[in-house]
Image (tube, rainbow, N blue to C red; front, top):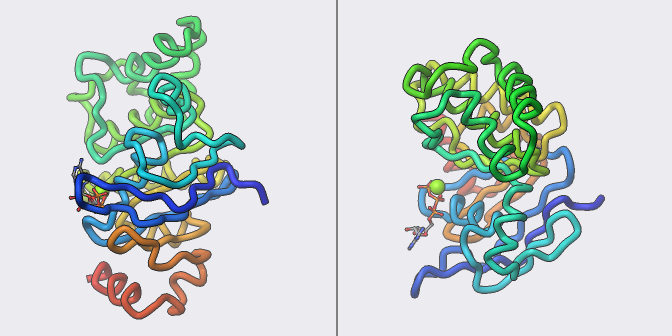
Length: 245
Ligand SMILES: Nc1ncnc2c1ncn2[C@@H]1O[C@H](COP(=O)(O)OP(=O)(O)OP(=O)(O)O)[C@@H](O)[C@H]1O
Ligand SMILES: [Mg+2]
């Protein structure tokens, strides 16, 4: 089983604070890995280290068969295109329509012909169930719709891996489901993904594996079935129970 991404012993410090203390994380092609853990455990930092937004103190990150941990800044931008990142606050360009948000990267960064980029954008808008919103501006869309445009925008760069950091935690409850459905459909189609979320239902439905982080360490990792069947360590089980409310 070859990994698409295989990070080993990731160590990350902010000043005197050790935030990641030897984290291993890997995904195989087509796999969806859900990352759970309490606030401050290092989930966002881990994603940012994986896509080279944050330098690490030590550790190895193999991505698409290449060691990328010590990539110089300039090449890091190139590599980052192979990973689509979706954040809590979608950060769309407010002055651009949905379609223009999506074609921005393909045209500016990948130098795709405009016509081809527009065709891709239309295709992706159908994929995220927004076929009629090409001309809509972000402020004319609900949070859930904006987040789906943000997902389409990330997909437009044709990433090998999608990284989602709490993509639904800033949304109104009624729009959470539509975003999770799109993410699940993408996962089912074979899009490799790492998803930080508190949505346990999504984890059950879409994840192949679940990893639980605590205080900068991996406290538990298991195939999704095992993770939720009560075999998790006591403190992980307690956290899951609290999340159920
Ligand atoms: N740029 C930074 N400078 C200093 N400390 C930071 C920085 N970013 C994160 N931290 C610290 O690193 C730790 C982990 O933060 P991180 O945001 O990765 O946690 P998280 O698991 O994503 O939490 P949450 O569930 O609240 O999003 C926290 O103690 C945080 O204060
Ligand atoms: Mg976070």
